[in-house]
Length: 191
Image (cartoon, rainbow, N blue to C red; front, side, top):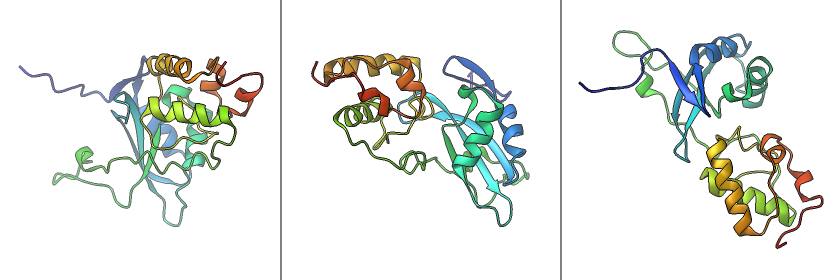
């Protein structure tokens, strides 16, 4: 007998068991969404992340920020998808059901989350550490560690990496907020 996974649309993300249909219901209520499906998949760092696939309504603009805010207003942070993928069409099996295997792979390098690059030495170090631990090419100043797919185990790796990088502290506030500009206040590099 071979175990091939769960068949009830539940995944475990950051220690929480998540019913994917709950996320789909919230996303489907957004006026720009014609069709949605959310899946749990392996992220760049090897952990399970949530990816939402959205077919926008006719003439609707695919706005990741608006979709993310819509979900975040209704569900806890661990249920907000890490990536949102725009669909041109719904991939179907010959039987007319959703073909999950035909869904496109999400891209993690073109996230519109952050428009600001790191400027100060502390911001540059933190952004570099976030990118290293999350195995991403680029992380902006406004990107949230957890929203990018980070979890508690990775946060331990981040704390270890910051020690070797000479940064005195990385707090949970720094990981949870999307604004790390405060991190440079009262912190030193190399101290």
